[in-house]
Length: 54
Image (cartoon, rainbow, N blue to C red; front, side, top):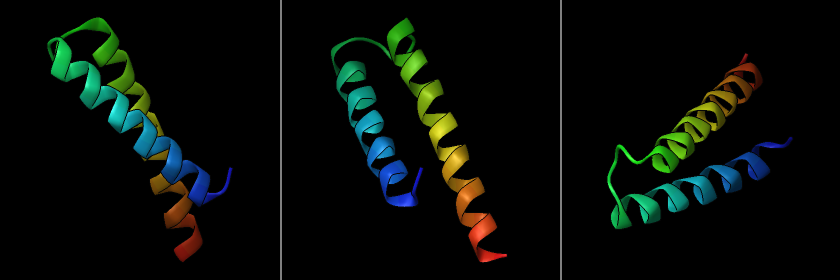
């Protein structure tokens, strides 16, 4: 996966999480699941960008 694709996935996931959280609560199970997915995507992005800089 290239960095640009990953950034698009991160933004899409972030928007979905914000949308769901604004219509429910931050502790809603679906919001938590998407937040976890977002964390994983961000960690992947970090790993990719750190490796590129080395």
